[in-house]
Amino acid sequence: MEQTRNKMDSSQFSQFKTLIIARITILLHLLKTLGGDPYALHISILAYLLSPSDLLSNTLKKLITNISIPNPDLSISHSRKQIISKLHSKCQIVSDEHSANCLLPGLPEELALDCLAVSSRSNYPILACVSRRLKSLISSGYLYKLRQTLRIQEHWIYVSSSLMPWEGFDPSIRRWMPMPRIPCDECFKMADKESLAVGTRLLVFGRQTFELAIWMYNLVTNQWSRAQPMLHGRCLFGCASLNSIAILAGGIDLTGKVLNLAEMYNSETGIWEPLPGLKQARKLSAGFFMDGKFYAIGGLTQDSESLTCGEEFDLETKVWRRIMNMCPIGVRVSQSPPLLAVVNNQLYAADKDVNLVKKYNKENNTWCVVKELPVQASASGWGMAFRGCGDRLIVIMGQWVVETHGVVIYAWCPEGDPHSPWEILVARERAGLFVENCAIMSC
Image (cartoon, rainbow, N blue to C red; front, side, top):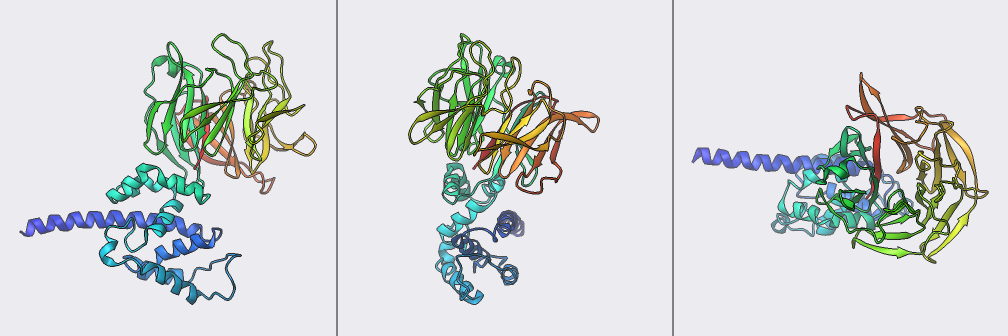
């Protein structure tokens, strides 16, 4: 009898410890966001902190009394006592009897969902171990839709290199996230590939033994599967994503013909939709979204002539507009597409010829130098990545790290001090010197 009780106590303690760790993880993340979120979100966060059934409530209540709540929508006449009174009235609508069936004991469903949505998505695997309800909620993908509604985004970097299969990297906590290997054939592994993150999906385009193929990684299920093929199979295209949609433009087909075809992918339905064709057929172009519009710029013609013009696609009118001399540098045969990145709707380019970062002026269609690249880029531009990740520019290159070869991720905020140095986010040892593919997933 005593042994049985000890086993039950051990099991209960283990469950209790897991719950506490999960809740502390959420709380630490939520406390960082108190300064800039909407008032309604403040209420949700503080309600969780002041939950009457929270085992940490006594400590947290003392902590919360020292936290200010700067918010322009909050009237000065609202004293802290009035706020706390309002929070208690919200919390107390959940009875202790019903609390056991809640997502977070002591909180109404709506407030619990807000808290979970604000929590870093790197915590979701831990939270899924707390209860069956949380596991079911996280595996359903609903929290990602809620995050989109609340305009909450985290930007993760997905990279594959010559010695490292696909892995995710969370720059906020600087942690690598292992991913399952693509269950593809040897031909796909060895062939050149393009990649694109859209919504909660990572698409990898390549060629299998007898056909072109698209393998799709699902963040919610942590699994790879074959994606619906494009309407017109191609490679060497320009592409970019915006929320749950992505646009692909140009490229070459299996016969080597340079295309002007364009199509749009919806990650929620998995369906490809045809779009009006580009005014200029092009391969090895760069694609990006800026101010809600898609752009394809640079590249080569069928005769391998370098293109410096760009084209702008309006999602509402479905019309392409040509912009002359938009590409800062021409593309030559055997070189990579233009290395471009967008941060806060501003366009930047990595000019590998002079090893400089340049910024695009939308008003007069010109470029100016803003900073040197952190390391010398290769002459061809292949083997490195240049991306926008939140409010930072990211450069990923292979280098020698601690007497071995590895992948180094550099970051710099272009809207901060222009003289500030590039920051090394991580140096991944034994990953090879050649970055094959890179994509930024924002969700």
